[in-house]
Length: 220
Image 1 (cartoon, rainbow, N blue to C red):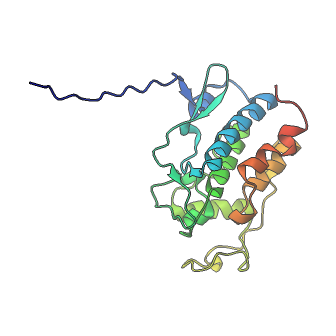
Image 2 (image 1 turned 90 degrees about the vertical axis):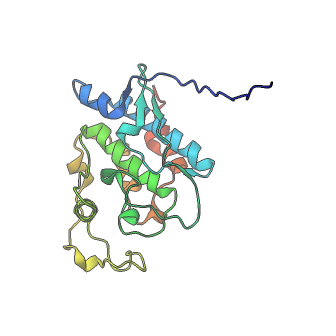
């Protein structure tokens, strides 16, 4: 009698002991500029690889970024990753609130720019070791974004959104240099270009890798 054959598949992964959240909490002091730049490059390289294969990660945050003993950063947790579609919308359970871009909070279609926004929040956190915009609800998260960037004009507001810009106070934009003190000017410019309200105006991951922050001096 033939026995039923069962296919057993083993997946072997590299063991990485900590995520970026744990790494930042355990760091005794501010990270060096070289360490921040190297980590930022690793994260953006991973995002660019995904986007070049039409994959959106959709949940980039420190808990989903692993840090090796050598200080290299690797993307993890692809449970919410999805092949890019021209008219995707995120549900409320996708993208952790503090790293959620405005187009997701407003419920409009999105693209790979959602990962760039989330990454911009993470890069800011590498400098401050604290979340950039820690909202407590979808509405409060929008307030956090507008307190930082300023309330968008009606011209920049997306169409077919039930929430109107007048629902929010007319917040003036803050100077990101005041929010992230002692930051390298090129790093400041990079994060500013990643945290743009209009996703069409954000840098792509490849644009970020070609930014002077990474190209003016060799990575060490």
